[in-house]
Image (tube, rainbow, N blue to C red; front, top):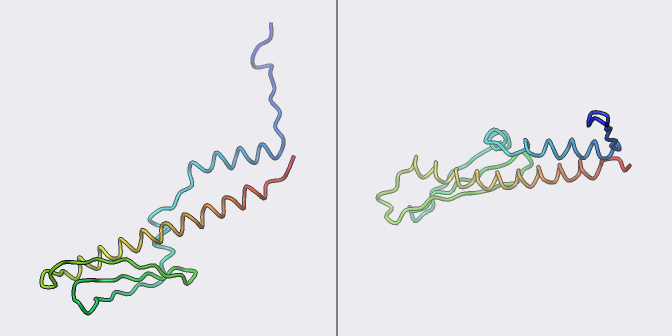
Length: 116
C-alpha cells in the first residue's frame, strides 16, 4: 500500500516563482509609513472665503495631491482642525497613488517570471 509521503509533486521554476509571488501578495499593502515617506512637502492655504482650508502634499516623484476641509460659517473655522482634516483627505489620495504604484510593480514582477 502506498503512503501519501511517497507522492512527489514537481513544479517548474516558473510555477515556484509564481507561487512565491502569490504567497507574498497577501503581505503586501500600502502602510501609513509608506504614505509618510512618499510625502516630501506640504502647504496649507485658507481660501479667501475663510470657509475652506486646502492642504497640498507633494510626493517624492513631484506629483501633488490636495485635500480640503470646509465650514459653513467662517467664524467657526478652527484652523488646526481644518489643517488636520484637509491633510487626511490629501493623504487618502496619496495612498491611492501608492497603491497604483505597488500594483504596477507587482505586475511587472509577475511578468518578469521565467517561462517554463
